Length: 337
Ligand code: SF4
Ligand code: SF4
Image (cartoon, rainbow, N blue to C red; front, side, top):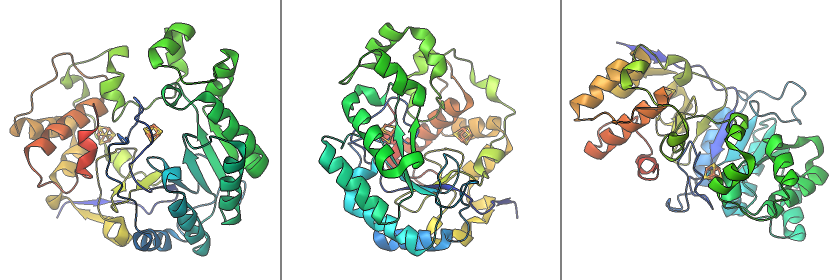
């Protein structure tokens, strides 16, 4: 029997739901306000957190410090859309002694100082160690920059050095440009010049392939043949577990390795039951041929990256049938474009 061996996770994120207050052009997980409000149940969160206990490694500078690729973060979608749940999962993480915990937010909710401070202090009291504030030109399209500024300054007071701004470059750049409100991406590009694109730490996956593809050079599918995704799909750091229990590695939104509510079931995956995974870890050419057997037609303009080819084929297959358990959550494929 052909098997895929997946190491235990050492850091990652818990996706509380894919529902977001906004629909960023670069979102790897195709989050949007349109998603169903399927928040993770507290029962499932407890099952998952109890199994992550003892596996998640602390930041190299201590269990009460945070880092982008260490510890455990609560994410989405936008976790502050369900503050009560965020508070409860934070308490659960403390109960199971998970180190270096933080929340990732787009700051849409930071409408005034009092409410912002109160929420952050309640989270800290519940055991949360820090916060990651997302700052980039895509969030700026929908979240007024004054809210981001508020979140940064109050988070600094509440969490000190455990308040991370990602990307700090854009915080300074938006200040330099004296932005206070929202700004459409095209206008930002005009103000900043297209050279600014090289400063965006962008992973060309998910929605970015469709919404930002025009900014990048494209290649025919054959260019990506010969590549295997074994490394990404068996990565043990910065994995994600979503509200449906899907175990996602390598930022590969829409590919489920299995049900993380039984983490031990993901250690050895029987590939005869998972032909999509089997093809992806073998060669993208094999995956392409699988797509062709379902009637997939190449994009005439080509693909910006291997993940563009991959997600376009997956999107096609999901539209044809529902037999592949690896292609989950299926709703993700509806909100890519
Ligand atoms: S990138 Fe973040 S803020 Fe933007 S849609 Fe995705 S989850 Fe929401
Ligand atoms: S090609 Fe597909 S499986 Fe490979 S890293 Fe990209 S999204 Fe993941």
